[in-house]
Amino acid sequence: MKILIVEDEQELLDLMLRYMKREGYVCEHATVFKEGYKKINNHEYDCAVIDLNLPGGDGLKLVEILRKEIPKTAIIIISARNTLDDRIQGLNIGADDYLTKPFNLSELNARIKAILRRKTDQKSNELVFGNIRIDLDERSVVANGTTLKLTKKEFDILVYLARNKNRVVTKDSIAEYLWGDYMDDALSYDFIYAHVKNLRKKLVRNDCGDYLKTVYGVGYKFISN
Amino acid sequence: MNKVNIRYAQVAAFAVLIILICAWVFFPNRFSESFIIGLLPLITLGIGFRFITNRRISVLRNQLHQIIGTLEEFDMDEPRKVVFEKSTYPLFNELNENILELIDRIRSHYQANRQFTQNASHELQTPLAIIKGHAEMLLNSPNLKEKEVQSLGVILQNTTRLARLNHALILLSKIENKRYSDVERVDITVIIEEMLLNFKDLVQLQDITIEKNYSNPLIFEMSITLAEILFANLFQNAIRHNLEEGFIKIKIESRTVTIANPGEELNVPTDSLFKRFKRQSDVEESLGLGLSIVRRICDLYEIEVKYVHQAGLHRLVLQFPKDGDY
Image (cartoon, rainbow over all chains, first blue to last red; front, side):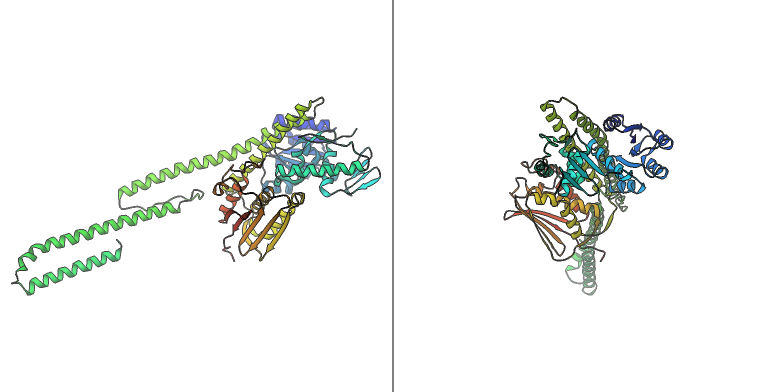
């Protein structure tokens, strides 16, 4: 999988590159509009992460061109602009997702994976970890041969953690992933805590206890070797 | 003194004059003759002078009222230019010029202040993203000690808090700058239902019961985004300041929406509740901006918002004005 990241803020760009490389993607980058434009025209990418405020031009223009040239590329806009208008405009022009700064890298990662899954014709829509199989189309989880009864939110949390496997995922980022802007920190922490507890109980009952690790006070980690 | 009074004074003075002249013409031998003749010019002069003074005062008052009227209409948020009518008194013109200058100065400071809040908040997003990213990367480096993980957790949590605070400030300044254009006829019950759905998880988690009582539909012309933000904030509060196994009562009657929930009385004075950064100190993590966002949105649409704590209930009442359009 090949990813292009267009972002003018060097520090942020480096972070995203590091994170995505660790995930096993082949990454290229551009820091100004012209450079991004050139890369889009000369190469093919599975996914492009594009910042809107670029020196030398509007990132929206890149999205537009890219969508026209290679329709199947997954496009995610990252922007400091957070009005509904900006969002709608970005999605109308052809972006698949819109992420507002400051975002969590784990969230960017999960969203890239979700879009790539939708866009590319992967034969299997399953995430498999040891004796857990998560079917993303059916939204079902089979643990040691038994289908688990999960609530919608429990399933979403499990998928989010699994997509960021072997990494600490913070409570904040889970809250933001599940509810977006509307949620209150203190309230959502309780909620996430309760759900992860239930989720773990259901896994343990089917001898899949070791997957979810609590990082006390910080978040959770899905462990898989 | 108004115009009618002046007219009366005029008529009365004229009548007295006529009577005196008649007396002098028809009874010239009377002893008062000389007295009257002597007094006549004086009286006429006095009345005339009074008349002129009264007239001047009334013109002065009128013009002063005009100035006050113009100032009363002045709205800091309206870009409309303030225009004073030209006065016949140079002193008033000078006063007006000074007021105009003052208004210009205040306005430009006000704009600069707003612009600053907006720009500053925007510029903060990227550095926040960088801090967040680095902390996240560190959190996943091998061989971290428990304490270091905890510290990173605190950094991340507070960065998120800052980011949210920042979002709220941007939102406030956007409302103040009237940057919401998605105005339409909003069905308030639909918005309430949508928001309740959003908070379903949290409501269930705390075993809160929702009691709804809608007597009539309530349609109001406003930005749909702001309507959502308004009720999201109100429900967030109703959940946060609720009791375990409590309830939220939502009532719509005529053009009034009441949201009530059980909870301890707040230790913050009611009237300062809608100000920025006021908050109930024992509830952690609340940003203290929720109610001031509520207030801003309500002000924008002239929705009257009231909070009372009564019989163990927090009660928030929104009084929607009559919609002019239908």
